[in-house]
Image 1 (cartoon, rainbow, N blue to C red):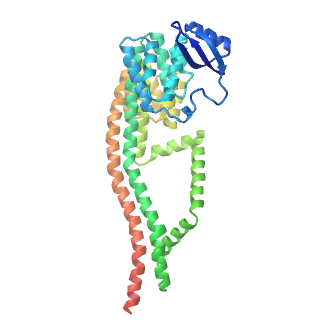
Image 2: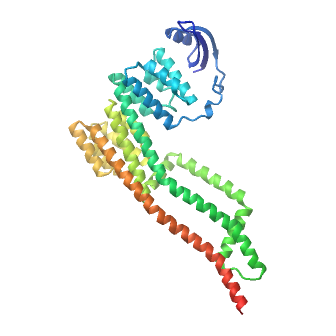
Image 3: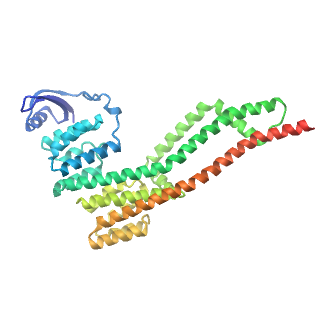
Length: 404
């Protein structure tokens, strides 16, 4: 579908410009007429060139940008402001140019008569499938204000979850890279000079010193090959992970990691419970909700377990029983889902489960940071000890020679 750039006049005679996807000029003119515009100029935007958006392709729409958009739109809808006016106001306040353009396009298409959810589906890289389906359910039930409020809470909870996980791994990562930098400096600069001094005096170097000396010389001599090999290896690993089998095996490996595996599993359970609860409470059918939930779980093992359960639920079987059969969900959340199905309060039980696992994840992350620090110190102590031994042993040999 080509993109057209247009110029038109509104009812007040003001000039209006923009770009819209349309099947042809006639369809675009009809759209503009329904919006109350008189078309003055239409031209096709050349493929690969975006009108007035040369740098938009380099700008990223962050999760923080989207949360602000959801929050602003929710507040305005809850205040009783019509959707079209709300979209126009929000678009005027957004600083991200790429998001501003997309919301402007959505606003114009809604004004032309398309449904809000239908326009959102045209921008899958901006609006997630979860949000689109919730809006679709809200349009059917007439509860757009409630659904938007619920989604804002969901988006903020997911952002907090990401911050917790990143925060837990940030400190160990900083320590690792700092230690790696210092070790590389010692091995590639200090050790070779140190070893060459002793070799000139005729002292036989001990094995630890020889090992570090050869490693340092090898890194200095073949650093470009090491970097190139690392890039190839990283690319190959990423390619494998992006395959179906690779993603499954990688996610299985993550779930088996010491302590970290518990963090990844709890994070996936939280996404499952929170997303499922939000969709069910918004009126999305259970099978459609499960289809969306499997995509946002963030772990292929959990996603496949949800897919397997959904296939049996479609035949009328209880969801809790099928999730239990997969062996990937803890007994407590299985029990909560079973109670929710029996009482008709599935979304409420899922919300309670998500809240419990969020608290549990916080304690697990604290435990992770508490355990990682001594493990890291032990490993670094062993490496530093090996380096010190490689430097001290030749000195002891030299002292023995001088003492004879």
